[in-house]
Image (cartoon, rainbow, N blue to C red):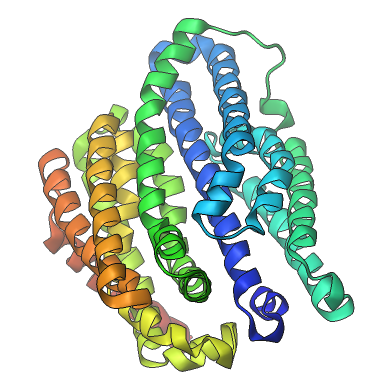
Length: 423
């Protein structure tokens, strides 16, 4: 709320659009790298054949982490100016150059988080993110109320870097006992982890690009003024959708290591049960929230962004219609990786990204700025069909069970409320 108002000086959406593009690029990098490292590391640490080689597995994960981060810094150094030009946003260039320090600090943060996640130490991860994001939020509050003239893009980025450093300190304190006592590089294990992770890297790249096309293709296709306006609108809507995605993201983080264990101990039937039960439960949570947002979009936009962003209302209503599909997408990739099918996950996401690129570009050319919202709906429906057919084949997914678990979740919730009232 304060970012929108603090960056929209004189009702201009340019600063917010530039920040949205920068944040999308950095989030894209962080999500891709985290997925590429997390899944192979957790899987290899839990595989019986690597029981005595946990030091080598951890050393290999850290090596891949460092090399990939240096590669991204090199790409941004060479192509930063071209990226800013392609997105018609010159103010983006200094942000990309400052981001090198942020990328370097992500190396220990990602490694420490994975070590904790692989051992189900989620409270420690929670507090690290609480400090990282809480410090960033606290800094925004101070700038917004006390130093509005200092509410600039560069200062926000510096605040982001300081917050990440604080998060690193919290994670290190929590994961110190789990870390390497010595570095023992093993090329065969590194190669095997990379070959497993390359599919997840590609999968995360494709899926996150597809979700970001409403920002990137809009900025490139429309004229600079209109493009920045619509990028800011899509950013507001994306933040609302991201909040609705929180249960799905949390479930995917918990279910991946659990499914790796379950596959070894109980077989595919239990993985199928976890998938159907979790998606059904998440749907029970987000459907009432989505219905409220669809009915009262003006109220939501007014609270989050203010009257200057009422043009985002139709975009919000259009995209909120397909909220029920999104939990399927988050559990889809996590489950396929856990059962050892990363290649299928990779190629299906490549197909879905290509479809998303063409539909977004065509709809923007045909319908203008709101076209990306129409494309989002089309892409989600097509993706749902593709994911269902694949999951039907590999884990024998039954949508009827998902609906049954959704209804059961409401029944359980009402039963709990009734018991509490009776007491």
